[in-house]
Image (cartoon, rainbow, N blue to C red; front, side, top):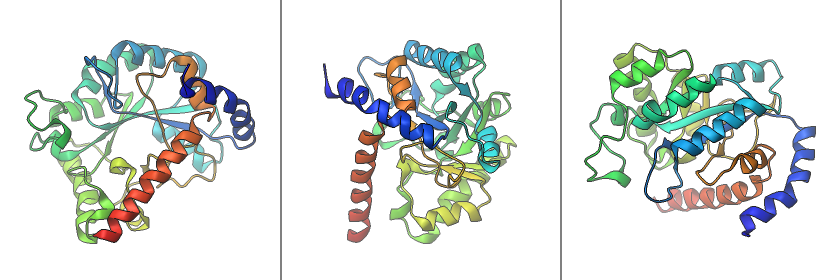
Length: 275
């Protein structure tokens, strides 16, 4: 039995007490829903995704991002509420995730990287891969008009925003909104920082561009005092059984995620100093 199995069980009672005294909703972070030959941290298999969504639908109140934002503004984001989000705008969000969301009537937000949707760029990780991995504009528009789906922006090219100059970061933030709106006719008012990388400069640029919210990869729940331009999220992986998902929602994995986030912030800070 691994540390990943044992330590969350030991931490969970204390986490439940803490979050019971400080209730807040969880925003879950997904990327891909696909059946791959080997484990990938950003991908959940179709079968496991359905198991996770079925459990959430039966055991938690799954709400849309707009509903959560309204609840935060009213000071009532209850601990049992959960929001589903997807980053990057993968084609399998339409092909594999949407049928499951429809089956259980679970809403979700998909953050689209506009050059991926334009099919003019691919994430470096998949460079040279001939498969079409991302949604095109027609598919983004189709999803955005679905009653369960909200479309958000994930920049133009998925850069590390804090490593760009101010004009470059503003362009990535504002142009992606304009691109999605122009090609789909949707109103895009929710944002996602690529790799969770942002500083106060980017936060202000998101507000200036006309968004109403932005999500990060910082761990934890979102209570009535949550900063809607720095909302916290909890990553879900293919290894998460319903029991482990319950532990994550109770905060039992937050200690691991906090340490990872601290390491990530130190890396961002070091890169900025070298630039």
